[in-house]
Length: 269
Ligand code: ADP
Image 1 (cartoon, protein in one colour):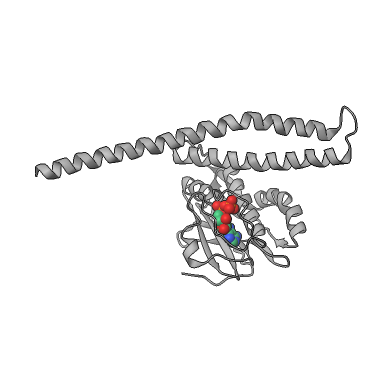
Image 2: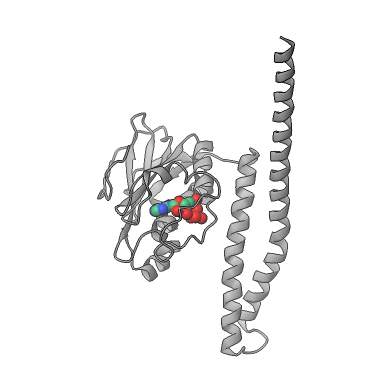
């Protein structure tokens, strides 16, 4: 009996230590990300100013360098924002404001942000569209963030000549299913269980799919979907493509229309 009590005390102490370590990590990441943003904003601001050439024309080489600085700073800002987001979500600090969101206008808002990327990659995004009549209960900014993340990923992991699209549907329990599909490189069954873990990236072909991100996008997206009372799931088959489905509560009104697009992959498990 005494032995058991001692063991319990040891376990409680170990748990307390581990919670404190996890809290210290969260605090450190949060503070560090915040501190990094201030100088980074100066880098972005001054490169933008220089690119405007308000104080005189720059030699082409310098203009090119300022453009490179700007792109790298943008990339760094995305990473820092992702870390801050993940830390806040972990700490339960993320704020969500649920309202009725019509999906067609939301997708139309996202489309221009990915059009240039799709064109330069030679990926067809004609199916990135949603019919009228679909609506969900969600946080507008956060749903937009998830959608951008999924479409950008779909483009990133799809070779030239492939396609990316959106499909809507109704779940068994009346939820709305918003699927971003692609005909890209796909994800093995084993990896499908890991990609929602923070910082996890599949070590795929470095040419077709360079791992340039943070590995945080899907973790953040899934946590956000869950905060909104939904979820984010994946179905995928290697070399056939992937389907990432955001599951969200429908608004009170019943969905009228149902649209099914081409199915690039068969359901896996
Ligand atoms: P990031 O895109 O920054 O690497 P994510 O969390 O968004 O981070 O994605 C994690 C990993 O999941 C990616 O690095 C990639 O290996 C894999 N992945 C995500 N989306 C797709 C997709 N549509 N097709 C193939 N692999 C994907």
